[in-house]
Image 1 (cartoon, helix red, strand yellow):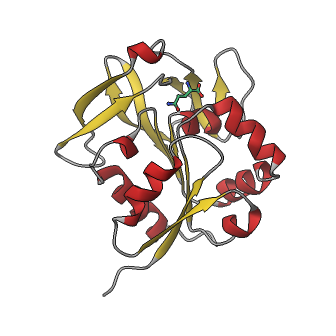
Image 2: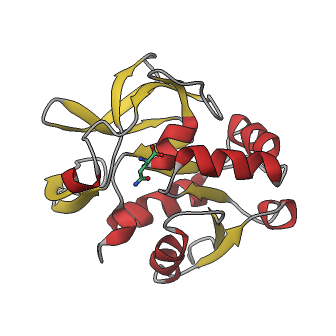
Amino acid sequence: MAERNVTVGVLSYQGSVEEHLYMLEQIPGVRAIPVKTLPALEQIDGLILPGGESTTISKLLKLFHLHEPIRERIQRGMPVWGTCAGLILLAKEIVGEEPHFGVMDITVRRNAYGTQLDSFRQDVVVPEFSPDPIPLTFIRAPWIEKVNSDSVQVLCELNGHIVAAKERNMLVTSYHPELNDDLTTHRYFVEMCRNANWK
Ligand code: GLN
């Protein structure tokens, strides 16, 4: 049987938008579209919140009136994947700051690894995604300080800090899978979109 075609959106105000679209376009059966306004949001089966600057993206979400429509869809079960700044946007708690969407039961620390100069890349096995190591790229990355509910599944810990997790329809990675040529995590998210039944 042919796999279900899906439309996956990438929130496209700021950050690594083109990189995510490019990765998605390589997966058969996927239509990848930038999302900036409601008509685009209405077409999608799932949404990627890219890395960038969480405070900037959050302001633009309100300016373009997408904050509430996206929050409502996430709560209705739309698959969402937050990478880096996108993870920060989803967290219910941010150390020292007010939350943005505030939908995922995690506490996040921004810029936890230090400055741009402390960015790094490491090959790591994330069993939920693949038995083979995948490249994880951290750029002024947050980490997940703690998970606050049994419904949050920890997917990857690196040096004692949680860097990937999942809660129902919400996937978060504190690193940038779109900056390497490895499609593993994008394929995993596309499967979440194919299997979801929220519309
Ligand atoms: N430091 C950024 C923030 O706090 C996140 C960095 C990134 O997305 N690469 O929003």
